[in-house]
Image (cartoon, rainbow, N blue to C red; front, side, top):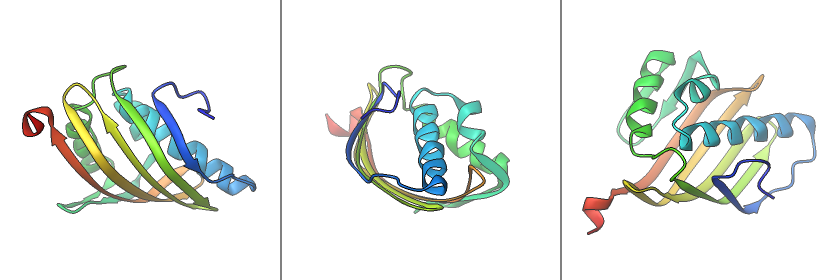
Amino acid sequence: MNKGFNNIKMGNVSIVTDEISALSERTVLHYLNSLFQNDIDGIMSNYTNKSIIITLVKTYKGLKEIKEFMCELAKHFSKGNTVLILDKMIIENEVAYIVWHAHSPLLSISIASDTFIIKEEKIRKHTFIGQLNTKEDIV
């Protein structure tokens, strides 16, 4: 069940049974695929100027701040050489929760979790927490 995203491997994924949840799932998978393909325009197409991302370090508000965060994050993911394993995905209407891990030539993410509030196929609110280690930290 990879839904056409070659760099995302699906684990325990809930089955989406309603139209709103299906749109939310499509938005989340588009975001993940864009992130791990280093497609900044694709990532940003999921957000609006009123979107926010809340992380442990900072809250990013609006397209400008979100783009700065995403550009910094995307530097660690080598296009085509990053593998994401989606361990769990639960979607209830406009709320999506994912747990995942990933590795790239530059970064290892042993565990990460995101929660998304999605309206009209746009991420309005997004939380993120993850254990990110550069390969230098691991060696």
